[in-house]
Picture (tube, rainbow, N blue to C red):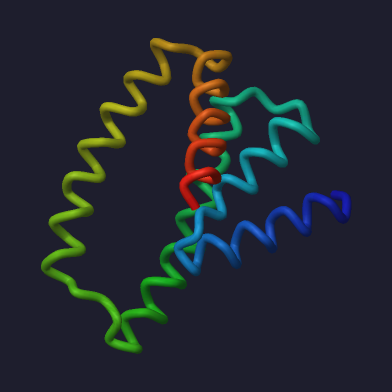
Length: 112
């Protein structure tokens, strides 16, 4: 493992736990620097997200900074969105999905 992989993981974890989209960093690293296919990078990102999300939820919960009723409602619809997204990405393929991802990054960057 090289230093760039360690830094990408660290930066993704920091940004993800702050709710700032650490997955964007990880997906960009995987697709540009390791020649990983877009859909594979998305899968790795989702796997990476599980332990970092659990730790963040525990810490935010201890600090009483989670509104559980609202969070669970949003999570339910997030699960529905995930099923729709997985279905769409499997039909669209990696090339189109990577272009949508890139366009989304540009649009969000301009918005901010």
